[in-house]
Structures are given as C-alpha cells and as structure tokens.
Image (cartoon, rainbow, N blue to C red):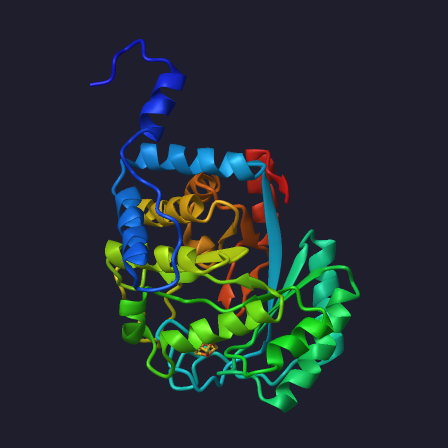
Length: 341
Ligand code: SF4
C-alpha cells in the first residue's frame, strides 16, 4: 500500500523504477529481437497508470506534449484491389458496397490538398488501392506529388508494394513520406492477408529507405490478435532501423462484408496501452492515432494523446471509412489546449 504522505516525485520515481529493462532495437527474429518483444510485453503488463506515466514522461522528453500534427488522407484511386487484406473494404473480392473509382484527375487532387491546407493540415497523404503501381500508374501520381509539394505541404503516398526504382522516382518528384504498414506481428500476418507476405512489406520499406524518404509504417489492432500479437507488432516496428518517422496505430474499423467484420472489439484500455508502448519503444517517432477515432470517445482520445500520440488524420473521411469531422476535432483540441504540431 502506498504511504499517505508520498510526494508526486516519489510516486513518479517508483513508477519509473519498476524493473523493466531497455533492450536496443533489432531487425529480425534474433535473440535481441526476442528480448525487445519480451520488453514490449512487460510494458503491456504494467499497471495502467504506471504505463501511462512512463509513456507520457518519454513523450515529454522528446516532444511538446501540447502539440498534435495533422495529416489529411485522400483516396486517389478507390476499390477494385486484387489483394485480400481481411480488414479492407476496398478489396475487390469482398462485397462491401464501396464503389470503385479510377485514378482521380490531377486538378481534383490539388483542390483537395488546398482545402486540407486551409483546414490546418500540414501533410497531405494520397492513397491508391493497388497491389503496387504499374509504370503507367506511377506517372500521373508523380504529377500529383509535384503539384501538392508546390502548395508547400508535406507529401505522403500509400500505393502498395514498390518495385526497384519506383521509390527513387517518387523521391525525385518530391515525396517526403511513403506509407506502408506492417499491419500485424509476423506470426499473425497470414491470418489477415494471404496474397503477399511479411517479407514483401519489409522489402518495400527497405526500398523507401534506400531512396532517402521518410517511412510511415504502423499497424492495426483489434483484429482478434492476442496481447502477445500487439506486443509483437510494436516490437517489430521498433526493430526497423532506423525506426519509422511516423507510426500510425489503427483500431480496426469493422466494415460489413469484410472477413474481419464481427471480430470482438478491443478494450479501449488495450488500445491506449498499445499507443503507450509504441511511444516508449519509439521515443522519437510521431505516433499517429489513426483509424477508429470515430468510434472512440473524446476521453479515450485524450488519454491516447497523454500516452504519446502526437499526430492524427484530419478530415471527415479516411479513404473510404468515416473519421471525426474537423469541427469536432477542433473542439476537442481547444478543450485540451492542444495546438497544431
Ligand atoms: S489494404 Fe490496400 S492492398 Fe489491402 S486490399 Fe485494401 S487497398 Fe488493397
């Protein structure tokens, strides 16, 4: 039992001193990597308040805790994807009611980017539902990157797997970030996606790095994985060397018609824990509170910001699913005293 007259500093010290050792990041299933997973699991198992304190303290050491960066994500080519990601309403094989749309014309993309900037976004992300872009697909996307960059926005694309040379083309056009999520821990991957494997993901991430772009790489929780799976995902992300600059953590948005619709919902505490562990293991990365915010209370979102999330997707659509309206986010940030990052 805690002594009544214990001061805040003592409580802080006690929580920070709990016996959780730090293990440096590693790339693969080596003993060091296994130790990192073990460390992630130990963090998950901490009492909620101790974990949050530790995550928030780490966050304050590296970031202004009262700033949250805002990115806007636009679907530039929707639906009809040949892949079988079990969470995705854009996979052609699932009947989800998403209407396929070809690549958006350049002027519409530029108009959307301009609106995003006016609303306060600093990064504009363009997503296309492809396994990976063919050469003829990439050319018009390069024009989009150039045009969005000219608006003095940071640029990001998520286009699927990249072939040799494509990352360099994107970089030369002015792309700042490439998003490619690991989605799950390696051992859970085949339960969610069978049309590509984990190594394919890692290969594309390697190409993005070699081309000199920033990496945006995260995952999805609430897909029926165990806590070990969540720890494995965060440890895998933290093992990337260098660690991703941007780490989107998504809470599964269940869409009728996808195989994962009907999965038992993840407890909100477990989602906040995932954010906290990501913050501790990737102290310098921007941790983005991504999909799933529409179903989250303001209180849970505020806890995520306390636990170290410092980026969001901003705008009422997230590819094909709902996201909180800008006015609702603005009201929440005003309430919390959070400024744009
Ligand atoms: S997540 Fe991407 S790759 Fe997977 S089905 Fe959806 S659009 Fe295709």
